[in-house]
Length: 309
Image 1 (cartoon, helix red, strand yellow):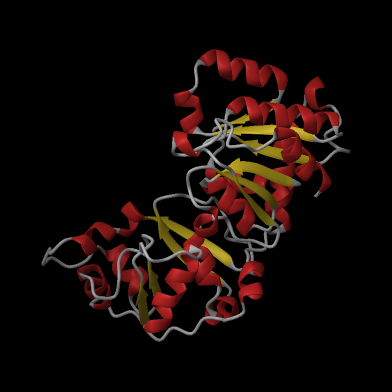
Image 2: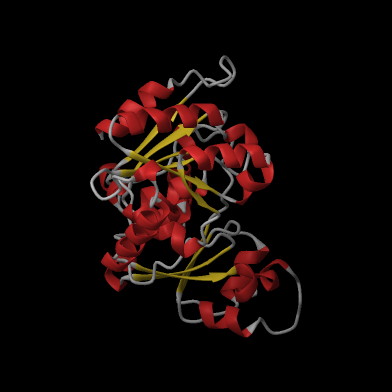
């Protein structure tokens, strides 16, 4: 998602109004947003050819994606074999960066990438304030679909006031266990939000369903409206329709921020100053996991921040 944020800083992207992304993660259907995002998987694109010394012709889909196009590659740097293979496919322009943070880099990771691209001659806007405003504007259809999903999810006595109270999504998971704030703290936030007249909805991904025992799932769904393993299109829709999202350092937090949704992202062991989501209404809160099991972040303060935003 942060790579998309860099792409949005390129003037031609805004002018042309569309981006085609080849990625492992699926952000959902954003094709009628502004700019329009079209996605293909790395497997479908045949990017394995870029990492080999195969003398056979490239996969047709890869050749189609690259030939005559302006290409921004986050696969490796400009001196790599991957860059050379991409260049052999005759793109209109090609700029590459190596995504891992350098040891000497203390700023946001997108600034490292931007600096690397500028050294190759790519012109990117300099205004730091403007860079935080660049986002994907969700379509009315996407937001309406998300509102319908949330309404259906909340059709219970637990959330009977769905039509009149703001829905705040709570995503307690992440790909890495150490990046997750304790579940009991998220539950405490949910209870406080409900007491403040908000409608908390928990969003659980595959990692949470695999990691937690069934009793934990049952207890959570008996107390809160819960959206379990939503498909990418559904997740994008509900993120665009919700009043806010509370989450860890994870993909949904970055996507929500990119869609302009109010986000509060909690950081423990990872550096917020380097990896925080970027967006008009994105806030990151850094805890102290080395000193506190709950990172020293008070659930009541988190709930107050969400309820007052």
